Length: 89
Image (tube, rainbow, N blue to C red; front, side, top):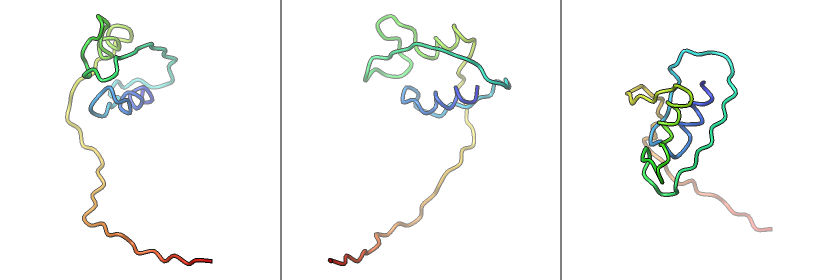
């Protein structure tokens, strides 16, 4: 389930990361066919098709629940351009 959550989180369809909190272990063979209309807002059914979240719930019994969770963050306080030397042959 962790791989599915990671794939969903990396997909541009959702506007936030997806975490696996199912507690399920092991590997699963999952095949889902889903196509969203390009440029359509996330979570909106398109052309009478169910949203991806609705499909996950109906086909796999998985529910996406919005929640707050700590995330690792890389903070950059200062960045400077580095001068490079070009040596011509």
